[in-house]
Image (cartoon, rainbow, N blue to C red; front, side, top):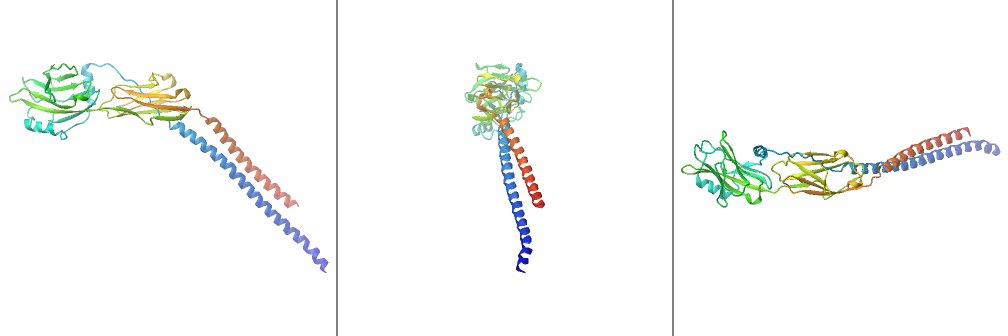
Length: 344
């Protein structure tokens, strides 16, 4: 009877052992497949991250493109052009000496349209227009005087200064006697008097402020990009009171405004100039200079590095393919093992 019991229990124990082995085999297959999938996808993700970094490095390249819009104009046309770009006009509250002088001579509103104590701001090398509009001077003479040294600049439409930078723009029907100074120098700052030779003399005062404009290239002093990417340089005009007629761009000592055969483009407005180069190579490395009219230039050094984007892209494709192949192998191995266990 003991012998029968042993014979009856052995098939049951063999079946349980087989099921246990099958469970362990399935767990082993799942763990193996998980490790393979994680490793392959991790490598693929790193390759994609490397590609993204390279792409971002190329697209962040800044570049500036500028176009030359210089054209000869007559004196009257230039005056009207600069009038449109004259900087702010405000009360002379910041200039105590000027206010004291203005208050001393009384309010000249009965003879002048221009606000007494007007402040005009102009940049060095630019053009300043000092306004003086009268109501009805009749036969009285209108003159301009520089108060810092009491120099008579103009009487009527005639210049009485040896400095030819001073000129009166007289428009008869508008009764304007605007004083033009071009080009402006730092020493021109100060108080100016527009005087009508009545009895007693009537005066209107204008204060001229002079600033120094300069150019600034974003990203300077050094910019790094990959070859094959585009280059965009942005040149900002700081402290500018009027739009420059032109902006010259240089690569080293060569002007590149007209290198249109490579697709180079230059844009310009009153506050900045952009240079755009759609495709770069290592020979485009070097100094780039932005030189606006009558404004201090700015320089940036561009480093164009050898690109390895194609190789990185191929590496990413191979990693993705190997990941898919690993998944297929794991699935096939699991199915074959289960079929063998069932048949046995």
